[in-house]
Amino acid sequence: MDVLTAVLLLVHLTPVSTAKNGVSSKSRKRIMPDPVTEPPVMDPIYEALLYCNIPSVAERSMEGHAPHHFKLVSVHVFIRHGDRYPLYVIPKTKRPEIDCTLLANRKPYHPKLEAFVSHMSKGSGASFESPLHSLPLYPNHALCEMGELTQTGVVQHLQNGQLLRDIYLKKHKLLPNNWSTDQLYLETTGKSRTLQSGLALLYGFLPDFDWKKIHFRHQPSALFCSGNCYCPLRNQYLEKEQRRQYLLRLKNSQLERTYEDMARIVDVPTKQLRAANPIDSMLCHFCHNVSFPCTRNGCIDMEHFKVIKTHQIEDERERREKKLYLGYALLGAHPILNQTITRMQRAAEGRKEEVFTLYSAHDVTLSPVLSALGLMEARFPRFAARLIFELWQDREKPSEHSVRILYNGVDVTFHTSFCQDHHKHSSKPMCPLENLVRFVKRDMFVGLGSSTSTNYYDACHREGF
Image (cartoon, rainbow, N blue to C red; front, side, top):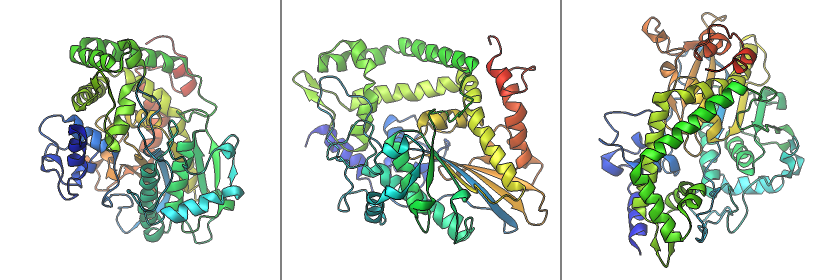
């Protein structure tokens, strides 16, 4: 056993009751930094473990928590796909050998795994928008294909679905027993990993997974912007943000030396190695406890990994401080947030369709939404991250509707920019729906520093910064 494997085994075989630096398994799931339980200094291994999100014990969550006189009206779920095979290969090295078939005798496991495979293999009756019907319904390659969902990724979302089923269906009866197609709104990008993640979550969630009732819509854009994707100012913000990333990298001499050393090991120019985005492949090795690659010139090792991961974390921190990404996020997230409040308003009026919405998406979908909501401290979306909007009705005042927002099971409602101060003058454990509506319809544009733009089109076409 080499040193790397020993280190990874040590990390992964830590008992679930305690973790690195004595942090409990519950706190390892945290999404907002906690000064009591976080490691005293930023720890790239700790952060990488959170990102991997290896299923272990069922996590506790705050979804569905409300006083008894509140009625759950609708739920809107945004997920990142589960664990996947890398999208990039480290040049001149052997691809990590990960098996993407689904096997009951391999960890991680979920009690619904075999039934999921059986059901997906009969999935010919599904109604999917083109081009989704040409995608495989579950991963099934002995050596994973690039970007393919793994067994870990399937189990992560079976677990998410089971957790949401216990809360929203068993406890709150969100869907009736004879639920129909129009009570679900399902949308995914055209990648097999997002479709399969959505199907795994639904299989864990629905009491009766009837193919005839499952209709997935196709979303061509990772921003889920539908017919509102053309936004010149958003692209300007993105270009400036990418420039900021580039300049930060130039300042990091340790990062440059690390890339040079790794490029020497694999015998390619440093520029080529960096373009191959090695952290994507290294995270796969790390999350799956597979040794980093070696050549006759040496081995890529844990120290290389730690330097690149540390830079990623520093980049996220500077991104929050410089606020260029926030401009991109406000414009990038507006269309999907606008769709969400429209559905919430319809539900508040008593409409019974689309009471459960699922967007199966990517890190580049969730990240702008988190930033736009003002959740600046939320960690970068891990594999199988979930962001949930709950709409509640006060039975004592039926015309009043409120919203809760949860990220990976943590209630972050009062961390949002539109509801930060509300709890100071209200005893309700949630935020008025009108706060969220006002934020999406007006305040998102004010956040761009524009006093003149009052709608998405004008904000997108405003000249300069």
